[in-house]
Image 1 (cartoon, rainbow, N blue to C red):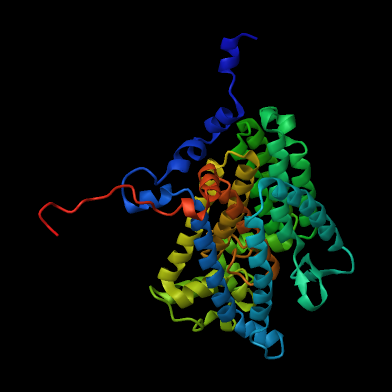
Image 2 (image 1 turned 30 degrees about the vertical axis):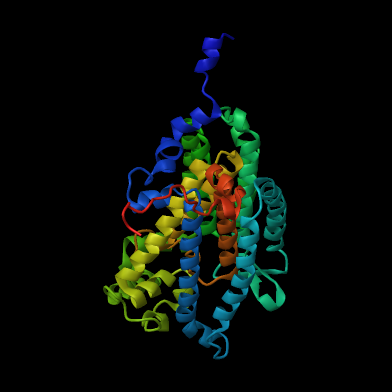
Length: 432
């Protein structure tokens, strides 16, 4: 092969740039051009790290407040008058999740790769255990495991994080052959297929939908051929359609979305009433009316955004949307800036998971989508979901610390990062 021909062959990096120019070019520099304070802040090597840390911390803090407010009524009814049962359980998982996120944020990419393989094996094992006597069924889904004093956990939440890390490791090890569909999709599709199959057997279509979105996001980021993406999208659409038309409950949700007058549940409309009654500034923390029965058990889970909108108003709702936007923006910038392929793939997977799930949940609350049944990341009550979300944050923080500029700055040490005096200005002559 001549040197001229070889020069025309696209490398993996140029191939990915051609598919995702926004990520490889514009997004990594977005906001850094110019001389304003925002441009200078975004130009800082650790800006992505602080954006992820600040947005996720605020979301977790709001989540604790909303679990306290939204779950008090339902908790009192189902737990013999204990209004703080779900809050205490959420705080227990938070106390486990925060140290876990901090530990992950200090690990390099090789440790995260091993963590992904181990997590994948454990996730499959836990998903299989759901079908044993340890499994717990609720509202038609058999998706939980009984773990004694902690109540139940949902293995599919941990499977999302493990799947992202595992698939990022697989794709990174095959980065030079990703233009070949066979090398791109195997064993990538096998891993996703196993997790998707086990989740669908639990009748949890909402979680399966999120996992599918994660898969497409990662394939797009690595530059999968359009024909491959289109073929997979067609198969996925047929599969979702078959799952819907063969289940009466799912068909009822579709009909209820299209015509609220025939809805079998008034939860979706009560969520709209909650958002509407919140006005600009809300009714105040704890003053939600719909949590007293209109939203039933969903007040602290799938419809927590409705309670937030009722109590904090449009301003509070927009603030939550802004926090998810900042988290998504920073996550994609981390993916675009990472020179380590594994970290880039892991960052885009974690970001897609959190942002897409948040969008779907909020769209359902606003009646822009049929009821799917997925929690709002960080804000919905659920220990497994909170712990898994914090694991994702830990991975994003680790990837942000390993960006080239950030790594050089952190390696220089605190003394090297202190401002130094670079000039001396003498006093004018004639003055003492």
